Length: 60
Image (cartoon, rainbow, N blue to C red; front, side, top):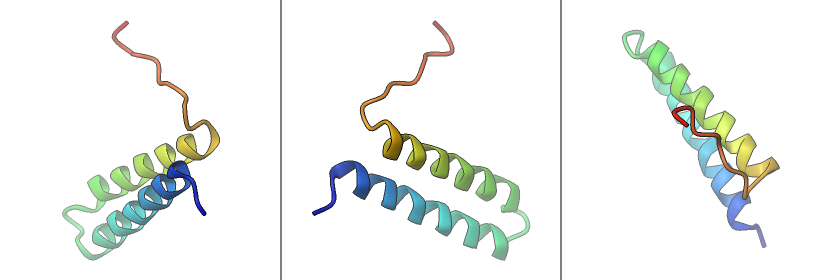
């Protein structure tokens, strides 16, 4: 049975795939959709490699 982190990472990667598909079909949205996809992929990797990790606050 997959862990919550594994499910979350899978959902994030699926969302990234969706954003890429939208970007490929709509040139006006392409840059923003590719950026979204990249962020979702990065967060999926964080969840997979360090599920209880914390991000540093850039304003601290």
